Length: 101
Image (tube, rainbow, N blue to C red; front, side):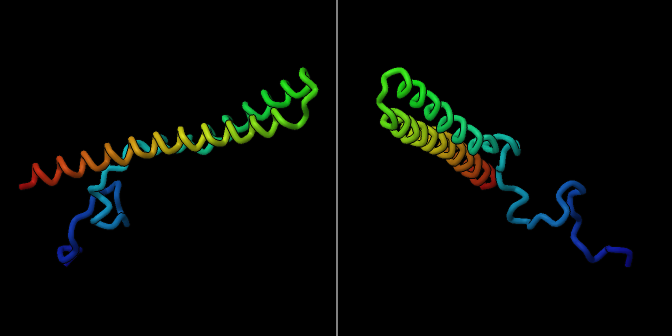
C-alpha cells in the first residue's frame, strides 16, 4: 500500500500540474530581462535628451522626446522578443502534437 495507488511524479516537478509539465517554457532567464531592458532604454534616451537640452538650451523638449522614444523602442523590443518566444513555443507544441500521432 505504500503509495502504490498514486501516479508517479518526476522528482523535480512535484506539484506542477500535468498539463504544465510538458509545455515548452524555455530557460527561466530567457524573457526575464525584458523589464530591465525596457528601463535601460528609457533611461538612456532620457539622459540623451537631457544632454541635448543642456547643449542646445531647448529644455524640456529633447528630454520629453527622449523618454517617449526610449519607451517606444523598449516596447518594440519587448514585443519582438515575446512574439519570437510565442512562435517558438507554438512550433514546439505543433511538432510534439505531430510526433504523437
